Image 1 (cartoon, rainbow, N blue to C red):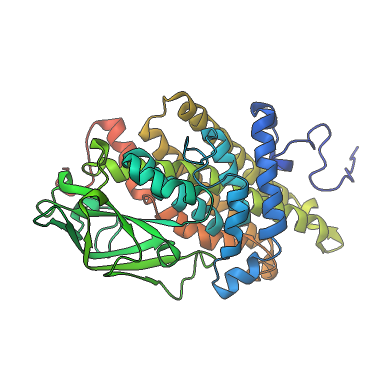
Image 2 (image 1 turned 45 degrees about the vertical axis):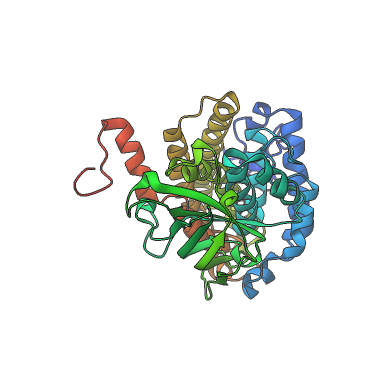
Length: 416
């Protein structure tokens, strides 16, 4: 005897209350505290009110909505995982949930919060002097000042030790910076830049130092990169530094900022947020196609009634569930102070890879309608091409994991 279930898509008895929605097949909701869920719902409300109604237009027109910044600050999302200086001091899990909800709206908006908080503000918070922190962190947390983080260069992406930007100390203690940076988020709208430069011999990672550079300093020039096919509702830039003269106290003074360990500590903060963020894009793609499949009828039957559709939805839900479980495990470890950097590579590699596969599959399931701005999955897939690349490509994170497994570094042909 065959029984037809006539319930609407996603209407699963006893699980509808999960804040993660219909994708929560295993009761993940119970793994989060009420405060964590309340924070996630607050960010989701911001996304529903301010981002979803406008994101297709912003993406089409390649516009970053500056007007969203005060709303992000109002919820304490800028530098939210940092303590003091006007920052919210929220947990790593709360930061992750916020990243997930923002990226469900658009990767570009989550990227703003990441560049501002996990890169620029974290660099100041981790490595800055008290004067630097007092000068910049409170207005950045309030959304009154915007920061950027200049590490990547036109010829130095995955290999930052080969950076060509130089900082030369002058008689009297000033520094003069020359060089260029590429793919620097927010640089054209930033008030302050944390610029990493070589103070020693070329190729010597130990000579890399960070500098706090107000963007109105003579010789600092930023220009937006045009004609992007990804992250269009975001700002990525080229920076040119021409005889940029800075006082001695512009250097990030902490010992932790000497060498590549300084920027890498900030990159790990950003990578952690990505692990959660991309699951938001994946979840949003899944929910879009689940709704569409329930409404779209072919051959007299809703698409969700076809076996192939249900198999694809099941595969998506499995990977999203596993992605959230991985993110939560890393978040609890981060809050406990036990998170291994290798685990961050595991999370970024896995979750980015699965999120982009889900977004692409969802686009395909939408048929021809899926290439329009009316539906989010293709926009998510395009954005995830960038997210998958920045803060370490798949290949770099695979080699980090490989080194942990074998004890052998294989980043170069020579094995060094």
